[in-house]
Image (cartoon, rainbow, N blue to C red; front, side, top):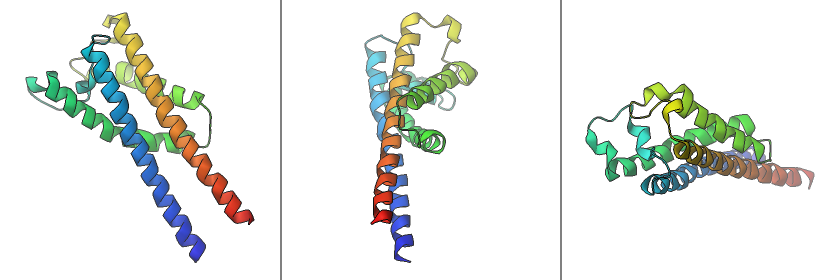
Length: 164
């Protein structure tokens, strides 16, 4: 009975860790995305996350960018859990990079019509495309490697506890 309770506590703390990784990953990389937008490396800022839902011109200003950062941080929790379900057992860098690239393809390709302020991929300038691909790759790498590392650390310690 004690082992089961300890396992449940570790499971809950792992889920909390994944949620924190997702939140801070979204926060960090959307702030860096805002800086890239502010310094004109890209024409797409974090307020893109508000485009399908928010009405009004406020979302195009600094307040929209700030709220967009918060929305991305919260949505990123779901992305971290998705990564945990699909790739957590692979403790390498390539799944995180692949995850970031797939997210970029989904936002800028598949879901592009949902974002009224986002031009089609063929009409975006090269700086915007390259900057956003890099941001998404680094975001995916951050989420992926952090979640996988945490997963492997916990399974390694569980194995030591079982053997002793």
